[in-house]
Picture 1 (cartoon, rainbow, N blue to C red):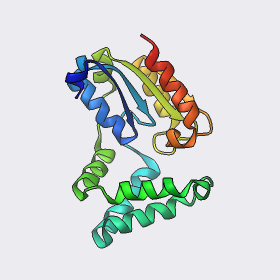
Picture 2 (tube, rainbow, N blue to C red):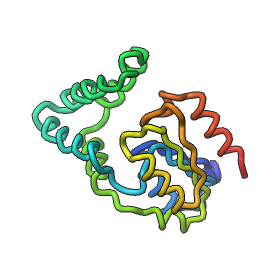
Picture 3 (cartoon, rainbow, N blue to C red):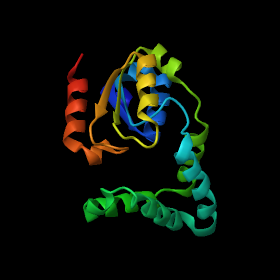
Length: 184
């Protein structure tokens, strides 16, 4: 698609940031910019890795539905989760359980094995924005700040957001993206 449109602005959230980064490294001329939204320089660490370790055997015994049920139970620890609109919760569930088993396995594997490719990304010369929720619980905010510094990238911290600022702070996220994408 990017070859047809010309240089595009690419955004990758979380695991999507790792995937988007790989695309930019592979063919930088296709991209006007890259936004890494709540994504990190390499594999996950800490509690998120432990969570994947717990979910893998659950998947083996109960499938995608069992994994999503556990993720919903974990989401209840977020005080904002009960106040989220039911339509959003339904969408998130439908999206997750509609994933292919191979896709979920591949994503899980990548999230715990991805190497640091920050230097490769910087070498592309593609303009980068690193934006993240001030309370991100996947890649620590400090980790993302250091990544942005290594990239020479613009950094935006999204107030009151955790790991999904497009949902948690929609207006602020849109404003940051519009501003970045409108700059030469």
